Amino acid sequence: MKIGILGTGDVGRALGTGFVKHGHEVKIGSREAGNEKAEAWRQKTGDKASTGTFAEAAAFGDLVVVATLWTGTENALRLAGIDNFKGKTVIDTINPLDFSTGVPRLAVTGTSAGEEVQKWLPGAHVVKAFNIVGNAHMVDPQFPGGPPDMFIAGNDAAAKARVTEILKGFGWNVIDSGKIESARYLEALAMLWIIYGFGTNTWNHAFKLLRK
Image 1 (cartoon, rainbow, N blue to C red):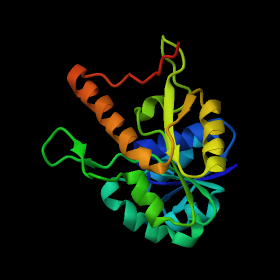
Image 2 (image 1 turned 45 degrees about the vertical axis):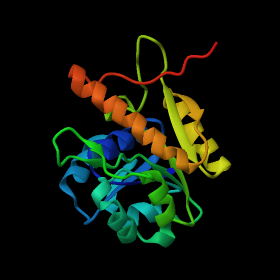
Image 3 (image 1 turned 90 degrees about the vertical axis):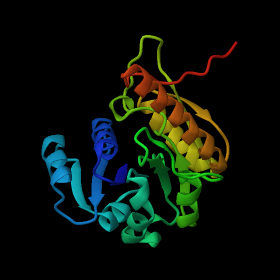
Image 4 (image 1 turned 30 degrees about the vertical axis):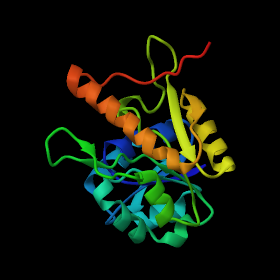
């Protein structure tokens, strides 16, 4: 599958590497072609990795991952070209964080990044995923207690099934949390992950739902 990724930060590059490792072709996009971080990633990742602009990455992908900073997300989507997302599954990885007071907090209330991305991309099928764990464990997570759980949310059943298949291939158990409105609870769950990380000064943790 061809994967377009918007964003050259840690999350975008980690997922790009993971997708290539699992046999996919990946194009990471940035505001301008030739982004240094993207080019360095391409050079060490191999022939299935390429770089370009936001628009080139969005057009390239059969599936598109949004991994931009929250403050620049709406503009990045517009630069990518809204029509380039039409009919596609879009994975939203974003936690809308406000760092103005030091320890981050959620920058939105009464909605979520997932809902806003779906609003900005009305022709796409947005699925919230990958936002409740650190980038080091997004692909092939290894924990003593076994595979952790990834909670997802989205409106389209086929898109969620597609993302579920990817996540299972990456080594995750998957829990469907319902419609895209549930993204506001998944982003709050990410805040719990962040608070625990700051409190313990460790980022090697993930969530698991236990059943009886």
